[in-house]
Length: 516
Length: 47
Image 1 (tube, rainbow over the protein chains, first blue to last red):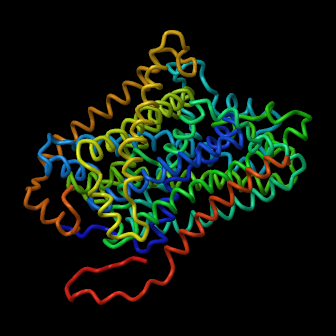
Image 2: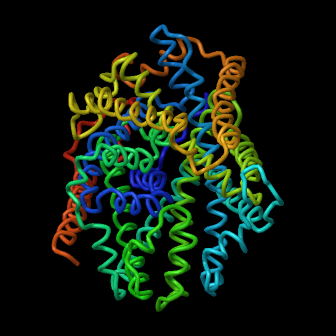
Image 3: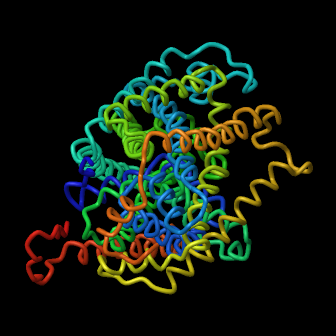
């Protein structure tokens, strides 16, 4: 059996794990969420959510990956077989497949960012950045079913994004992913800090920071604020798609997973805070220059990045330097995330289908690129929005919930805490078990139920105002296809591998932990 | 900036960066020497 790859250093693993967690969501989702949910007061539920759900879940995923030292399908297969349950392997396939589904539209967003890096040198979006983005650049159609033609620029740049991702993941964990993390993450941190200090020094920036941090403590009694905080933490830390589990499976045997989990969660939160300061200082300066209030200019999501920020940059000194810097930061944050999204399926195919890493990565990137083409049509922005909504609000939540229920309810999480305590300096116990066995599953169930109820409620409008047929085709159908593919992969892998119980035990007993 | 907004910003940054510093110090401090692993074992502490 081929020797399993390992990280070359602890810092390499940490930077790659943080790179996976830090993505576009830290820059365009966190600041808007904080602003909309009580400003500075939102930070209280956010920190509580990070401490009671985010970091405990990262620790759960690190411990699971490190304890089992395998990809997700192998982990779920072993856990079920060893404890005498039906094969759960398909759940281990669903998360890596979901990761590729997410990577497909993520690559298209990165292609837009790529285009804007070049554009920002000349402020090429002109006087009306909204019109430029929606009409001149993407030429967005009126309906998700009105495909129109492929945008050749977006297609070419998406191919570049996939090629860069392929090049990095193809070189392996130590030679590719770790090297990329060691280069990209310090560079990203440096650029973000430069941008933050520059934007904070602009006239009017204080008004933006007031809008972001002014606490409205009355909002703390609103349950929706707490749900938003837990949701933001869950999405921000790359949970529920198997990246953290797979990354931790490549750690050497005696690695401190508890401290690594705290560092990953805290560094992700630090990036979110720095992004929030940078974005809201920019919005404050823009509002001051136009004689408006921050509320008049604030946006979240792609509109913030591709409309509001370009508009703000146009009227600022040094825009031709700080514009490219902003979009390059965004590109790097996205690249480190997309790289991590490829790893769970790569590990799964290598282990369960006995396909070499290089072949697996090539097949995954080719398939991912083909799926990305769907989002390069004129309807791309609309179909991408639906895919993003369903993968985040249903796929990731369901994936995370399944792994928690199976490991913490059907089995017991003690084998993970015993393992983490054996190799880590910080010791965890009943508080951590309560967080991962009761609190987090409960929050995930509430969030998932609320999302499902919202979609089927006749009194509420459809998500985004899209037709029900579009939500069905680009949302539900895609999720169903992923489940189907996961089931097919389980059947197929059973034929390709003959893993005997003796073999499983021999490999597992090397870990010296208790029986899972 | 208003005092309450400034307080929230400083409190948030101090909490996060303080936590990171503590974790980094614990992670990369020099560990006391451990007894040599028995020959043939695969001891490999990566810190």
